[in-house]
Image (cartoon, rainbow over all chains, first blue to last red):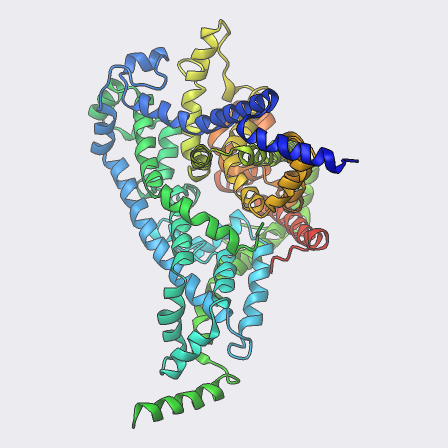
Length: 310
Length: 313
C-alpha cells in the first residue's frame, strides 16, 4: 500500500526526474534511441548501397568493396538504362498504366460507393450488391479461372489486362461508402432544393467534400499499379508488353542475353551487370520516393476510415 | 416562374422522391454489377474445372467430368505435395511469429521516445520498405547476398568467415525469407499501434508515476494493456493468412535448389497451372486452398466480433 506521504515523495521525485532521470532510466532511454536508430537505418541503407553500386565502376563492384559510397564514380549505368529501348518502353507502359488505372478505378469506386451509401428505399439494388460484394470478398476463384476469364474476354496480351482486373477495390468501396454516409444530409437536401439530380449531387457536393479520401485512394491505387509485376507476367506473352516491374524481374533474375544484339552484348559486358541492375532498380524506385511524402500524409486517413481507432 | 416558386416545387419533388426509387442511383450501380459478374463471379464459377478433365480446346462447357479424381491424384499420389503444404504452413507461421511481435515491440519503443523530431524521422524511415515491390527488394537482396561480391559476404569475409550462398542453401533460405519479410513489414505494422497509443489517457501515466511506477512498469502496465484489444484483433485477423506464405516474395527469390524448403502452395499452383499447363490440377489445389481460406476468414471475423466487438461490415 502506498501511503499519502510516499505519494507526495514520488511526486517530488518525479518532478526531479523530469530534470534529471536516474542512471538506469537514462541508459534505458539511450538503448531505445539506439535500437530505433539502427532499425531506421536498416530501412534506408540497402537503398543507399544500391545507389552507390549504380554509380560505381565495374572493378570495385566485382571485388565487392562498394558499401555506401560510389568507388570510381561514373554514370554509365544510367546512360545505358536511358538509352535502352526495352527499359524505356516498360517505363512508359507503367506510367500510362498508372494514369489510366487510377482514373478508371476512381471513377468506378465513386460511382459504386455513392449509391451504396444511400438508403435501400432510394436504391433498391443496394442489399443485393452488398451481399454480392461480401461474397466476393470472402471467396476467390484463384489463378487459373481468372486467367481463363481474361483470355476468354480476349484481354490477354493487351494493355487492358493490366488495368481492368482489380479495377474496383471492394475494400476501398466500403471505406468510401462509409465516408459518404458521414457527409451531413442537409448539404444534399440544399442541392436538391436547388434542382440538382443525384448525379449532380454526387459530383458537386460529395466528391468535393471527399477529396482527401479520394486522393489517398488514388495514391495507393497508383502505387499498387506501379509495383504490380504479376499481372504483366501472367497475362503478357511477349516481353515487349511488360510493365516496368515485370521487365525488372526479368533483368534482376536472369540477364536475357538472347534478346540483345552483338553490339548491345558488348556494351553489356563493358558495364558490370550488377551496376546496371542497380541503376534500373533505382530509376524504378524514384517515382515511389517522389510520392512518398504524400503517401505518408494520407495513410493515417485510410486507417481511421477503416474503423480502427485508438 | 420565380425562383422561389421553382424552389418550392423542388422541395415538393424532393419530399415525394425521398420514398421513391431513384433510378439514377440504380443505374450508377450497373458497372459495378458487370464488374462483379465478370471478375469475381465468373472465376468463381470457373472453379468447376477442378472437377473436369479440362482442355483448352474443349473449354469449360464441353470438357468431360472427372469427379474427385483430380483431388485424389493431388492428395494421394502427387510426389512432394504434402511437403509443399508443410512448407507453406511453416513459413507462414514463422513469419507470423516474428512479423506479428516486431511491430508491437517497435511501437512500445517509439512510444518511449520523447524527442519528437527523432521519432518522426524514425517513423518516416521504417515505412519505406512497405512501398517497395518485392521485385525491387529481391533485386537488392540478390545483390547484397551475392556469394561472390555481395556486401554481406564481403563483411563475413572481413571477419574471417567463409562466404555463404544465402539464397541457394536450404539451411539459410527460410531465414532470409523471414528476416526480409519482417523487415519489409514491421514499420507499416506499427501504424495501427501508434494510432491506438495516442488514445491512451496521459493521466494514467501521471497517476502511475505518482504511485512509484518506473518507466518499464508504466510500459508494461499502461501502454501494453492500452493496445491489447488491437493486438488481439490483429492476431485473430491474421489467422486466415496461414496458407499464404507470401507468393510475391518467394517467387522472386527462390530457385530450384531451395524447392525442398521454400516451395509453397501458391508458387506450386503457378508453376503447375501456367508453366506446365495442368489447368485442372492447379485449379483443384486452388479450390481447396480457397475453401479453407474462406472458412478461416469467416471464422476469424466471427471470432473477432465475439472477442473484441469488431465488425467489418
